[in-house]
Image 1 (cartoon, rainbow, N blue to C red):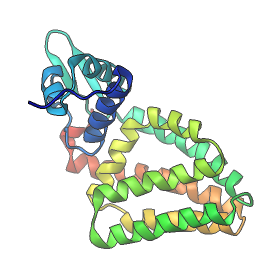
Image 2 (image 1 turned 45 degrees about the vertical axis):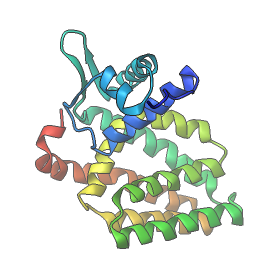
Image 3 (image 1 turned 180 degrees about the vertical axis):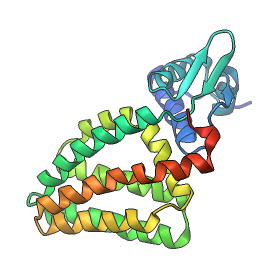
Image 4 (image 1 turned 90 degrees about the horizontal axis):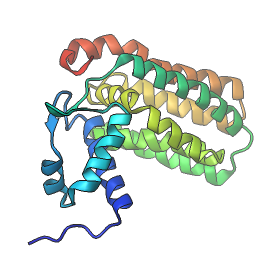
Length: 225
């Protein structure tokens, strides 16, 4: 018989939280899917207490709806939360790229360039989950270079519904090349110390979801609130 994972309650809760959150964002758990503490505890080989704690944390992000008489369900994507998350990201990340211009050293620039090489490879191979993770890493590298990692973590907490739309967009092959070209342009403008152009491109990059929403709603009508 397998042993229950020997993590502390906190680390086990975080493990369960990150696992379920990733499944929701990657649409492995679709909106309105019913899940239970027992089911998740068995599947992940953990006790029920950290699962319950993870459920509550996911409910705070409005990724799960917990209804005492009915059960726990994956929520539908809320477009108001998508827009709020997008708005926050746009305004903070414009400031981040402006700060990055003229301050990133060669090592920091090389990390971003390596990320772009991997993005291009994933585009060619159609590796969707990897592309999403590389997109996330691209933005994290900008925050790391500006020593604002805590800000990135705060944004992640508020961007769950925005990330769900981003993943749907990537999975649906909407604007792949546009996303990649914008990443390359942002990198170029940071390298050349052109803050106005870097900021404008980041704003366009994070507004792209506004042009994709209608197409995604028509393709996945049951996913949206």
